Amino acid sequence: MGFKCGIVGLPNVGKSTLFNALTNSSKAQAENFPFCTIDPNIGIVPVPDERLEKLVSISKSAKKIHTTISFVDIAGLVKGASKGEGLGNKFLSHIREVDAIVHMIRCFDSEDIQNVNLDVDPIRDLEIIETEMKLADLESIEKRLDKKNKKNLDENIFKILEKAKQLINNDNDLDILKNEYDERDLKQCTLLSTKPKLYICNVDEQSIEKGNGYTEKFIAKYGEKSTIIISAEIENQINQLGDKIEKENYMQMINMKETGLNNLIKKGYDLLSLETFFTSGPEESRAWTITKNCTAPKAAGEIHTDFEKGFIRAETVSYKDFVENEGWLKARESGKMRLEGKDYIVNDGDVLNFRFNT
Image 1 (cartoon, one colour):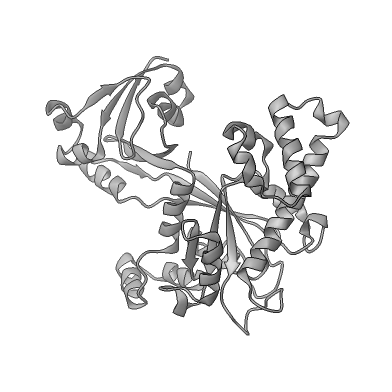
Image 2 (spheres, helix red, strand yellow; image 1 turned 90 degrees about the vertical axis):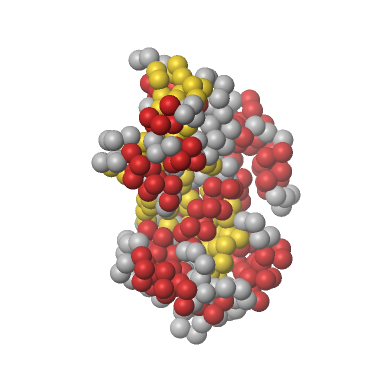
């Protein structure tokens, strides 16, 4: 399934620079003036996983296929975007289908890079974006609750939209809905304000390791668990370097422990309760993304819907046992391969081979 993140923020906070770095491309135009990005840029990035490299080696696979993460870079929003200010709210529609929203926050001073506000204030900037998202949600809700539309709404969806409207009008947090309603129903509402959120504090090179006053203020309010400190410019520089060793040497020189992409993936998987299983053989070794507590038939369905419908058993070996036994054959001979049924909950790192009827 992979997962899809929408990157939002005010103009000139570094979204397009980060997008270019994360996707290792120059798709996103990055210039020093507001509203540089007009159409949303979409980049699909393979998720690095050293375990997959090992499986390819053991199974002597002809192909290696990573699971992926998609990034959608949305044009810079400004106060009043929901009413058409700047480039308007049409860009907010591009992130209704994403799994998580990544808020890009400016946490650096610069005389060279324009700021749409007079000063740097990450908390104020985030509040501006979240307000515009709420107002965009309100407009969407009112349309769906219109007399001619509401008759087609499921009863649960109708209740959620009514409650969401009330919360927005009273300037309350829509996350309250997550405690009261089913997650599947909430997803059907496609409300921007209820989507899982990650915060990226974009800093200068000197602040990569320990952050700065702006990041301290931000983390004090929003917490460290969902906040990532990144220098978009440095990430871009790293990706422009030639080989892996050159990149590692540069990161060591600036005391950078891991790339922003790796950090973002880890926090994203944690936020969305995702994990990985593998399939491995001579033709290919492949990583697949599933949600935690996923049953074996559901995992099989990620490969093909027929696998889920006709599921019989899953030949299962933990990653550790697969590596220690150097593949399927010895794992089977040593009793490390198990046959699991429909109720089996897949563990992160499981190597699976599905038996099914078509």
